[in-house]
Image (cartoon, rainbow, N blue to C red):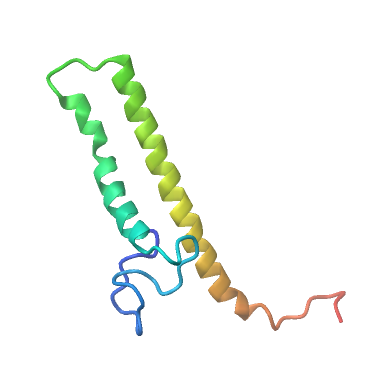
Length: 102
């Protein structure tokens, strides 16, 4: 998955299908499972438009708000995954010296 979730090859894993290092919800890994299920379910909320009843402006607004909330959730967890990955690879650059530094 795009949030660096679903890892099966991690040695000494602390949480099933999650990476070992969690940044936002360290003490509540169930939030990641809930977010993954909610993401899948909310991706299909557009199916409501196929209902036999005509869609109303309120229904369109509610679907737009749900999609915005899903994208905010997705982006938040994506930023966390990038942060964890960047922090792990930053040790590579710790030993480099740049001009002007002593």
